[in-house]
Length: 403
Image (cartoon, rainbow, N blue to C red):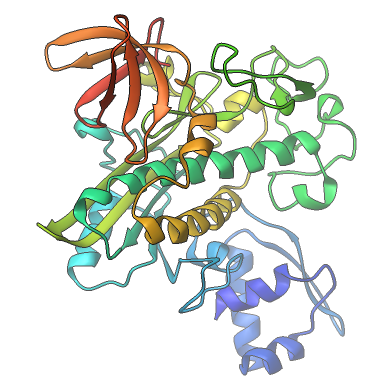
């Protein structure tokens, strides 16, 4: 019920009367008052005026069930949104662990598990995922796709694409600084001035003289394939220090920004030889993180560290759901990545670059050429031989660093 009230308040810039809420949701005025007070306690700034009703002035940066659901339309059957349920926890050991247990207990496909804090987050190859509270996104999506288990790992690829698209949506909004949209994306007050001139709380300690990476907006031609596949001129976001601020994918599923990792994805499944019981896709995104442990500081980054702007995490989740839902529906039709190869390769930061392949006890240098319809990375060795490599079997690094 609280999600429905919050959705009603979100969907208008005007005051909405308590009686209107009562009539629409068939609840009492006392119940409305109770839910409004709960929202206030959670950090929503709600203006209440007698004979006018309620109006939201400011939204907190939280990722609760109600905050997410109020921005979605949860339906039993629709192609635009596969999320049927959101489950929120203040703290868990790992959202993947929670999702797997829920799946074993019969939880429905399309359930999204979200938490503010993980105590035992994990990445690929069992690596620990550092999980501070209140500044990052930790979520796991439970799916029950009717696909062969061999196709399930490909869901990691479309998840990476959906995350990259969602983050780039937010970055574009930051760059455009559209005052009407930014109130739903950015933490703080809004200025109609260009971002480089902002000195109010939208950007912490940020002004035209700040050392922060405040975005400027330019247009440039780009090519990642050594001139083979020149892209049309596209809008690029450039930080104050000249570093491109845009999300790409490091094969197979790390999301990178400014050549640093901003998101990790861990996909796990339960399956029979010819049947997939369920798949859980865990996603960790560094959003408003200011500092990282020394162990990962040279590799990790966040939206805040790249742009100087703090954004609302729930908005990123909603954008991810939109993109993933569209791609998941298309993927299920073919159970391969044939419909996504071109788009993925455009996002692939390795594409057209020399990479170092570490396989078993040997290493070699090759030119990354993109993926095939199964998500395998196609590389050309120094002798001209082409081969496909599988995720999980090898490690791919840039010649001079992480990417």
